[in-house]
Amino acid sequence: MRLIQTINQFDVRMFLACVNTRHQQQLCRLAFAISKSGDGYTQLFLPLALYALGVHSSEIFVASVATGFAVWLPLYWVLKNTCRRKRPPAAIPQFNAAIIASDEFSFPSGHTAAAFLLATLAVLCFGAAASVLFLWAVAVGASRVVLGVHFPTDTFAGAGLGIALAHVAHSLVIG
Image (cartoon, rainbow, N blue to C red; front, side, top):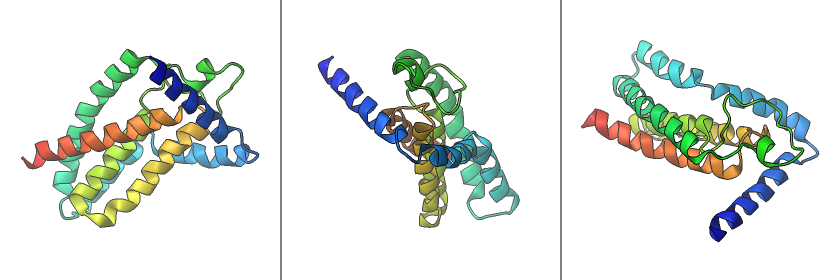
């Protein structure tokens, strides 16, 4: 229990360091746009666009993305509602987030998990050329912290969850 408290205290300190900068207002504008790109539209339209364009391996990519998100959504929901970690505005007195989150709990970050799921599947299906999507996935996770709706460990857990599920989904699809 003491270890969890120590980790939580460190997490809160790191969170406050991220959101208490003199450039917070400018960062929030950029973070809002990046966060929006992780709302699910990219995860839907990128595979469909690549398939429509006839890109090699896009059939495997589409099937892997569909499988990954079919596993991710219920697992994510169970984790959120089992862990029940309060979001920063509820956990830190007098802190206000830049946006209002769509649900009550913060662990793990769903935006981050979904972004890393997509990025990992893209690399597994298309190779190193798709690794640029990891920059986007990292930016999505960071944006959720900057906007004040997740602690850093929420995004680390989301990244790990997305990467792990991508490997599972890809393995299921390719047999």
